[in-house]
Amino acid sequence: MKRLLYAAILVGFLGIAKPAEAQVSVSINIGAQPLWGPVGYDYVRYYYMPEIDVYYDVSHRRYTYYHGNRWITRSSLPNRYRHVDMYRTYKVVLNHDHPWRNHRHVRRQYSRYAHNHSQRIIRDHRRHDHYERHNRDRRHEYKRHHKNHDRGHRGHHRRHDD
Image 1 (tube, rainbow, N blue to C red):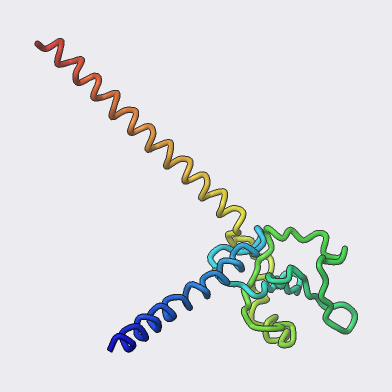
Image 2 (cartoon, one colour):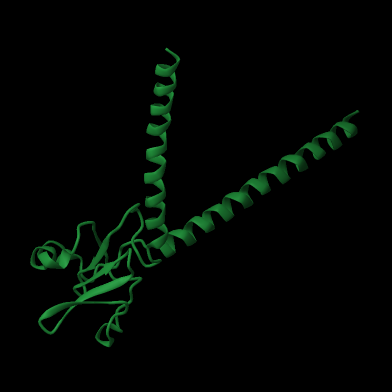
């Protein structure tokens, strides 16, 4: 009977340990996303930028673009893309392998987002969060200060009333 109980406890612990392992791998990808990436994604494999027909591999930090008659993957973009502001160009999140192999479909589906500059990016979101935290802390400090200040004045007024 004890063996059965111990076996059940062991299986229960193994079941709990597996989900924690999966969470670690997701966190790694979150940290790997560039500051110019869009806000709101826990996992991203590729960004497609319809404005310039380029894919960005988030895990390997490499760009894939069409050059001549084939797709090329490099760690940086060639000079012909030097005008592109990665913080402003729209990024579509794609989580399947080698999306450029189906480029016609991807282009047809997402070309309408070219020159769309309304997307929130990680850099600005972090600034916004920092600003909000800073203001929230200042509001809390202000309330605490005025609460203590008001207590002192109430006591002061009581003494005058007596």
